[in-house]
Structures are given as C-alpha cells and as structure tokens.
Length: 437
Ligand code: TTP
Ligand code: MG
Ligand code: MG
Image (cartoon, rainbow, N blue to C red; front, side, top):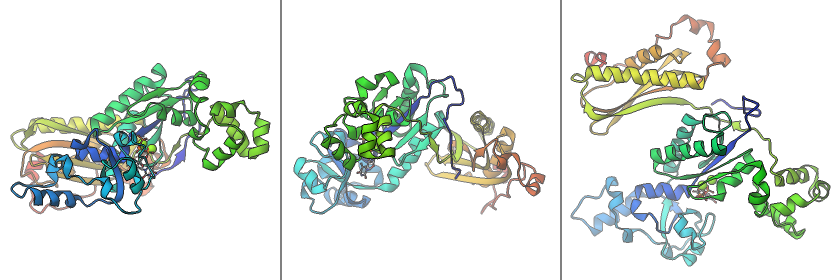
C-alpha cells in the first residue's frame, strides 16, 4: 500500500477548497437490514455477541419443518421470530442502533441492558464484522471511482477532496455529493450523509447536520449561523475533559468559544491547544487530506441481458471483452494510474463466479496489453455453463508518474508487456473455446 500526504490538495489554486466528509447512516444496523429487510423501520440494536447465522435458521427449521430454510430465505423469517433485547442479561455493549431505536434514547456504546430498559421491544442482532468490512470496501470503491482523493477514516467514514472533481464546486458541492450518495445507494442499498465545507473540520460537523441520508453545504460565511450555536463537543478534538473545563468557564457553545480572546484561551488551555481552540471555533483548519490508501485496483464489468454461450455468442463476447479492457484502460489513463496484475471475473448462469489473474513484468494502462493478458487468463477457465457476467480488473496500481512505473528495473524492462506469467495448467484443457473470445 502506498502512503503519502498531499499538501493542500487542490491543483488549481484559483478554485476554492471544497472538502467533503461522508459518513454512513447507522452503518452496522443498515448492513443487517440488507439481509433482513423485514426489519426496516423497526427498532433494532446491534451488539451483545458474535454472529451465529444458523441460530435463527435453526429456530425456523424447528418452527416450520415442512419447508426449506437456508441462507437464501433470511428475508422471509417472520419479524416475531427475531430475538428481542428484553431477554438479554449480560454486560455486552451496543455498537449502534437503527434510527427507530434512537428515538427511544438508545445509542452506540450503551450497555445492552440499559437499552433494554429504554426500548424493550427492540430486536437485538449480533455483530458480523466481516460483512461490515465488505460493505465498507464497497462504498469506498464507489467513491474512489468518482473522486479519487479520499482519506480513509475508518469503517464508515471518509474525507473526499471535491475541489477539482467535476461537479465538486457546483452549488458548493451539492451536485457531486448527490451523485456520490446515489452511486453508493445504487451499489449497496445503503444510505450516507455528506457535509461539504472549506476544510475537514467543518466538513465533519456538516455531515452530522442532516443525518440520515442528508447533504449539508457549508460556506465560510455560514459559520455564525450554522456552527456557532452548536455545543463545543461537536468539534472533533474537544473531548469530554476539555468540554468540562470549558463548561466550568461558562463556555457551552462554539460561538461562546469563538468570542474568547486567543490569549485567554492560551493562558487556560496551553499554547498549542489554546491556539487550536481559537482557530477551530473560527472554522479555520488547513490540515491536508491524508491519502493513506491509493486505489488498489480498477475494474469494469457487465451483466448480460441474457446469458451468453461461449461458442454460440463468441463474436458478441469478444466485442464486450475488448470493450471492457478499453474502458479499464481509459479509467486508468484518466486517473493517472498503471497496474500490473490483470484479472478477469466471470459469473455463470448458476451464479457461480470464477476469477483468474496474472502479473505482468511491467506496469501498463494500455488497452491492448490488458486485453492480451486478460485473454490469457480466460484460457484458464472451464466453460461448462452459459455466462452471465464478465469483468476485467487491473490491480497492483501505482501512479503513472511514480518512479516504479517510469523506471522498471533494467532486467524486467527487457521483457515485454506481453510476457504475462504463464497460465496455470487447466485440469481439463479448453483452449479452443477460450481462444474464441
Ligand atoms: P458511527 O458512524 O459513529 O455511527 P453509525 O454509522 O452507526 O450512525 P450514524 O448514522 O450516526 O453515523 O459509527 C459507525 C459504526 O461504528 C457503527 O455503525 C458501529 C460502530 N461503532 C461501535 O462499534 N461503537 C461505537 O461506540 C460507535 C460510535 C460506533
Ligand atoms: Mg455512521
Ligand atoms: Mg462514522
């Protein structure tokens, strides 16, 4: 993984800096509702233990033994079969709650038993970190594809530099924020809230102003109206201790903090923290985005309107395959990346998926080189069924202008882009078929 911090990330100095903060809504709970859509709108809390998928299904099999209950039937489990929080006795803590549960005062970091007192009818689901990580990756990928300068802030939030992205300045960033929200919802079924502001500090506050599924646009001149009435704790960096001390001095809101002389703040809170409190309360923050993880891969895929046959539809498949390679190459070139792991993905009509990849000796963003390497990968697949989906991926990305990409080691430079590592042998060779597209 590459890591470097960009300075002030705008490359065009005359465009005002626009930074977005995106945070997923009730993240763990919303992911759970994707598999249990029948719980939408109900108070649900997540916590109390690790997931044991089969518990619920086992209950269903016992309750209704005359029909099949598998992982595909999760959405059909009746609501009253779900465990309620009121039977819970333990020291577990809630990770999050749906907005319906929050209406009862239930929230993150609360003991499950305390939550049970506030909202005994709430449904209690265990955590499934693997699933949350999966959706975390998915939503971040959607954003990278639209706006590549992203600072990862953990499982459900990121900062995004809107400054130079098309639409990033329009209506203060609202147009781009809408597009990102829609792309994430279309791809995952999840909603998020986005704040767009001149810097990270204000963007983070803005993203909370309109939750869930909201967009807040903040300009420097909105400070007095929208930020100063908020409690000091809303500033990311004012913790409970500092807040208690501020309160003791009669400072409750950010506006009251902003009204204090910087010298007074320095005397009471120290040189560095005092000066920072003053700057923060005036909405000043020029921290750059820390781009910790560059996109590691770019891909294009397509699901066919009808499943295609490797022989009967070979011309169509060949055309689509070439076009996907051209699209990925264009994406790489547009975003300034080159990669050297070329992969393919296929999904068959029974929904079984296969992937194959191979690593080139040199980095590339060239459509023909990608097509060639991807074609070799295809030869390693057995085609026993019709194809439903085809995808091409380029991974191991680096920036096209970095040393690695520009100056491959002399030995490796001798070998051509086309010397893709030899395909692993097939159990049953199907070369003729694969050669067809
Ligand atoms: P948050 O973004 O703080 O909360 P949220 O996404 O659940 O709700 P909101 O709509 O207000 O953003 O945290 C993201 C996830 O991190 C959350 O779904 C569960 C987990 N988490 C914990 O496990 N413990 C905690 O104390 C908090 C705050 C979050
Ligand atoms: Mg969240
Ligand atoms: Mg969050």
